[in-house]
Image (cartoon, rainbow, N blue to C red; front, side, top):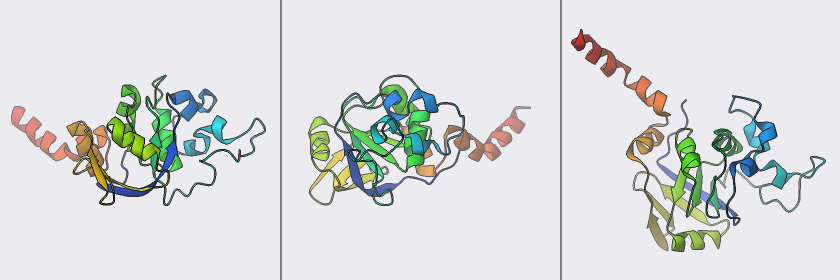
Length: 193
């Protein structure tokens, strides 16, 4: 799969203070009837966004958010816990988010996100508290320098596994990376026969 490469993402934030947001809250199980990524964004946080009749809840910060300007989700600790459904990062990506920032992101969610073009950013507790306390702040997530910044006010670093970082910078998933190396692979194979 190819997607827009991530180098530096400048965006305002959407803040969800809740901790332990699990994958069933991100995309309820009843919406897991597809293997397509397209269209899952309409079901992201469905039970938080809509009432039992399907009407939008006024209390949901996600209803009416401008995703042209708000592409970074800042979430409480232990984000993406629960089952290992790949649909969760698919839904967030399809909804319009390009990065999720938290102090702690579940390992399986993080792995699935990295393979699907969604940048999971883990920051230290102090930075996390500052971001949670500044909804709508303009934040720069710079994958090349592995930093998170709010203007010139402050900067924090984060770590991303090098191969996943390379794939995100190139705008490809792991299979796409291998396909881009096909000429070198075929050349090597010819020397082995």
